[in-house]
Image (cartoon, rainbow, N blue to C red; front, side, top):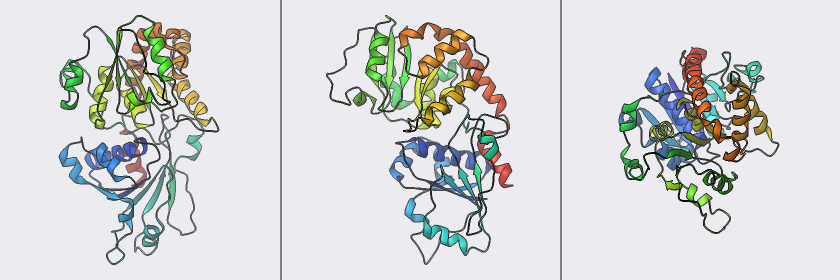
Length: 356
């Protein structure tokens, strides 16, 4: 079947990251023909650049306007159209679907959520005046929703540790053998300076890997340069592909992530993490975070529950860092849980079954 995915990038990378991972899953695992129409093609190309070259040739990446720019030779009608995160389809593209002899199915791919209410709306029809069938599809952790994007499942073990990506080799030479490693990928609103200063006061030797652009965040408001004790080493890593970022997550003792894609990848790394969920003005993000923590901490001890909730809500490391060993064990168990829960193939496979 032929799939068109429409991606309007709101956040820097998150929306494009999800669309690219879905496309690669549909193509590589299920043999589907996939096109992505994106309003920020340079960002999408950057994310896709580190993937297998053959995969890159299989997925057709196009600018947003290419979906409707050639009226004399219209774009071939797909079998499935994905509106990623509820973005509106271009009117001229939609007009082409009206006159197609066989109408596609339109899927409104929603944001990932652990909230219980999504079970009531997943796969529900969304009647349209134009008559083309449209359905809601909710990714999630529960059995009766859309599942998670897991491909590729990152491998574990000592062999993985030795496979340092070329783009990271110079950074990895600077890591200290006995220092803990923390990777940071967060939004500008995080209290990062204060968090790092508190971490430095613990006396632990920690190498902090700042993802692309985060060194600038430490001086976002023009403050004086951050001063940290010698036990904390700050290192900036370059922009890396999805697979290379997976490797970074797997090699750190703790990760700070944001958005949907890095959120799931942190869980698959089997390491403790902070999910810096995208802040919303109506504070709906707090409800979403609480819903996830209810699932994530279901079998955790009361001490670990309190420590994890504190960390996830940006309490300073001094208030929860001592629970890190217990959190490591919990993270491994949670990774095993979601892999078992999604052994049917997760989001891409559930989409395929619904379309069939």
